Length: 573
Image (cartoon, rainbow, N blue to C red; front, side, top):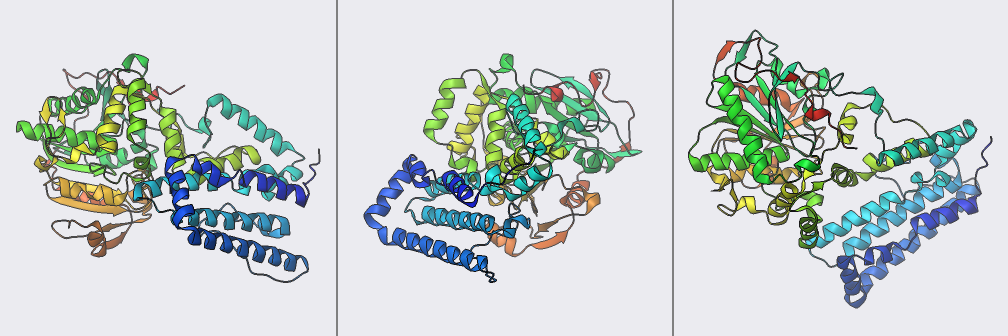
């Protein structure tokens, strides 16, 4: 079946309706925007008038350029996409005047909306919220996101005689049934088959976690075990994807006896658990088991994201009790000072937290899908709209990508734990105030945590801004090594040493300065993965070498089942 291309008039009409929707009226429903618009109308009208005049001038220039192009003249673009923007990369966007017009008109309008938000006289928090809202609408209204205004999708529909549209509809219906957009070929991966396959066994479990011990891969091992606390918001196997990019396997290959916490995916019957439960039944219990099993008093520990936040809280508890259980610490993209928690923090306010507390604060579940949707919105072009175009407009299946399979494997959290965490960390930033919080009956003070510490942050992290992660070096008192990696919250961490990709920055000053920009100014860029730097740092805390034991567990901690265990296989439905 041949597909007739819409007329230029239809395209312009549809694009106008799609992009229009009166953006300013939409944002005016936000209190901060409404107040800002009133201020502009009352006191800043010259600024707004200048922006509107500039917008009109650009559109007139664009129209003139398109008329000149139609007459056969060579013209320069009036608006250009930002470097790295792949939405308009194909030649089809410049092949015809109408699509070139749509593309450039969209870019002009998008810049006008950004400039309008910047013109509002608001405090930094309100301005940040509006930047986020504006970006969501700008991204959503791209002509690349609509079949009628995407020349690549139209060309493919013509070439396939409509089969691409039929396949796209099928993909859409399947995703509606799933309740989410497919971002990878999920049939290509299975936990325990080709993901999370580093050999090991579950040697302990309780209501909240399974504890995995991995099989040594070297004849001798470092005496001090390495215990890893991943985030409970996602599943642990981000650190054990495939053998070639598994951080767990790398750590085992370096001669570490590695233990991994696998958090339970919360079901309704576990919806009553609290933050203290995660510390006591989770972090402390794992520490107790590994110390008992290994016969070593002091452990090397890793905390990733919220796993690092929970670990820091427990270490403050242990410090208050005078307990010496730790030889070294590693924090991977973790927040302890939430004063600048990035865009997520902008939307945590008293009304939203109070509403959650009323709904699930005493029992219930925070659905993993809601959390996943929030994280995707932070990078909507990459994690939402690119798949709308690929899956629905072009009717193609998404490519197989292990990291995105993990990203779609979301986890629920218990309501009481989630509400306490959001209020005391994101909303009130109480962990930075000595003695403000009492956990497991003990007032906590992070300044009492005095272990050698490796702090990793990543430059493009949209969940844990790197300068916020840096503040850990000022809150705790141990000898600090701060390392800044390339890329984002996940890809910056999962950066295999063998591939020698990307870079990281170090500053060999003995003590990191208070100002992160001062640290960066004196830093040195090194090619490759931070994994190698971390391994060299960790070696000094190994406690010597011992012959590797082939048998996992012990008479007290018997093997329950092979890794990766049952808990990680429980999927949100």
